[in-house]
Amino acid sequence: MQVELDGKVFNVFITRKNNKNMYLRVKEDGIYISCNYFVTKGMILSFITNNKDAVIKISDRLEKKEKKKEEFYYLGKQYNVILLNTVSKIEFIDDNIYVKNKSYLNTFLKHECERVFKERLDICYNLFEENIPYPKLMIGHMRRKWGYNNKAKKIIKLNSELIKYSIDEIDYVIIHELCHFLEFNHSKSFWNYVKKYKPNYKENTKILKEE
Image 1 (cartoon, helix red, strand yellow):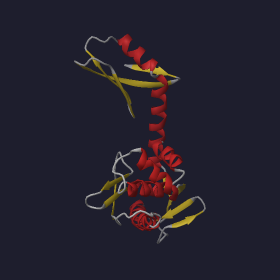
Image 2 (cartoon, rainbow, N blue to C red):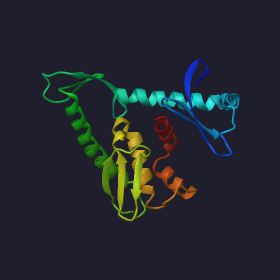
Image 3 (tube, one colour):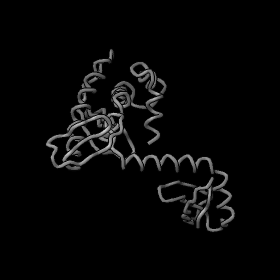
Image 4 (cartoon, rainbow, N blue to C red):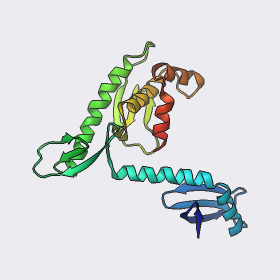
């Protein structure tokens, strides 16, 4: 089954269960509907149409996210990757990055995560007037979070994908996680701490939520 919304064609995948309500999710490959056994095709199409704006918005965001995966970003700037066997090390020239192979590029990004994140952690930590522990820094890929705080073990973990973003976004995530040592929740008090050390944090969250 397919449906067209604002000129875009979506595949519709239907799962019927013994549930009272109808649910809709948008993924890269189409619209997923979960509904009761007695819901008709017409009712499903009407439900999708009524939620058209949300579907289009999520679909556009997913497309942008997929496109960004195919492109190379470093500290908030996009570069054209040019593979050259004659290059012994990575070279940045204008909007181009010259590298021997993609394996070397991945190694470069891993080292940059360690260097940049540690450097920014030191800078952001020293901003705090409150008494908070200096955390152990861990770095890794996370599907749904930009950062993570383990208060008991005094650890913060940063998503390696953050190296694609500007220092401003990296600082926001670090400050966000450091503030969890003061408020281990997302209460008003917590966001007041975030605002204290990152007044433009709403701009940062907007940029990161686009992904």
